[in-house]
Image (cartoon, rainbow, N blue to C red; front, side, top):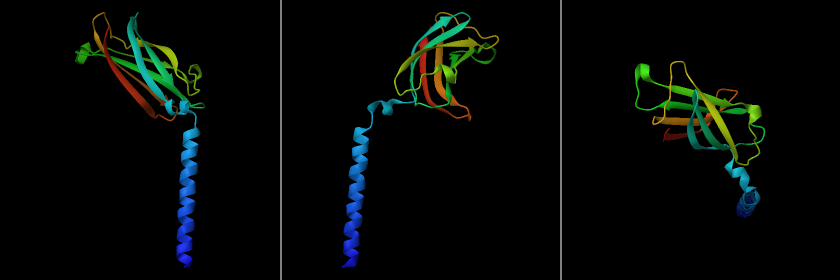
Length: 142
């Protein structure tokens, strides 16, 4: 009989923990669910490189920067053109809300972009320990 009482108590404790966990999840702020997201908007020429509009959200206290890379499609070898830009840690507003940012991408030496080029843009977060996450890609014609 003692084992069945123990089993009932264990089952009751598990049920209580499940209900408390579900309650905590239901009352958690919905904004917390959208942190650390990225979305690429308009990509345009901006002499000498490119500019990309990015919508981002991040957790408070995160120590990372937003990185954007671009590569011109349809080229190989010596004709390859790339550009990169960052928004440093101190310039990001990390409060779970969505924010708009414009990233200026500078071309690498010898790279060039022109109206009509197809470009693949990748944005992601990069932290001070070398990890990158939340990668998003978009292909657009300039």
